[in-house]
Amino acid sequence: MSSRSYCPKCEYPQSVCLCAYVQKQHNRTKVVILQHPSEVKVAKSTVRLLAMTLNKLDIYVGESAGDFTQVRELCEANPGQVGVLYPSAHSQPLEGQSTPRLQALATLVVLDGTWRKANKIWHCNPWLHTLSGWHFAMPPSSHYQRVAKRPDSLSTLEAVAYGLHTLENLPPEPMLALLHQRQQFLSGQRPD
Image (tube, rainbow, N blue to C red):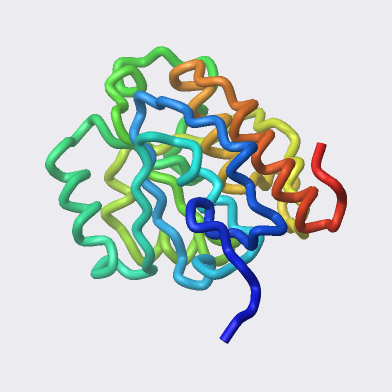
């Protein structure tokens, strides 16, 4: 039994409670996260931060097509309104686009996991390949503290913040500030 006290709202230990730093944002584009099971309990996971910030966010945990039946049915029921943010051979740059396909986008699917785990979700779910695919042509620099094998790696929070800013001009600063404060706590530094 743990003697550590947790905040009932953000579910972080009371000593690193993030509630004072949360700025709720009202995104028009619904964000659907397909989270690899190994990411659920990761202390540095940024999906928990997104859940505290965005008003339209759904999280599905799994790896195989059977794990994502509900979200696949949602995508099939709304063809042309759902896109996936994942760099693939057929994805197009999200920035600078004003195509009818992008303007019709109501739901953005984002894969959460290391590159290897996200790639596994991508390959285990061929239905994702039927969605309009998007990637970042010029992603911003990542400020997420981790080891990344790709120079264009972003945390899930950073990718969603940049994607929503590109799609609907939603300010990324509230999400990025929350990430920054969480990283300050994890590194043992005093918050700003």
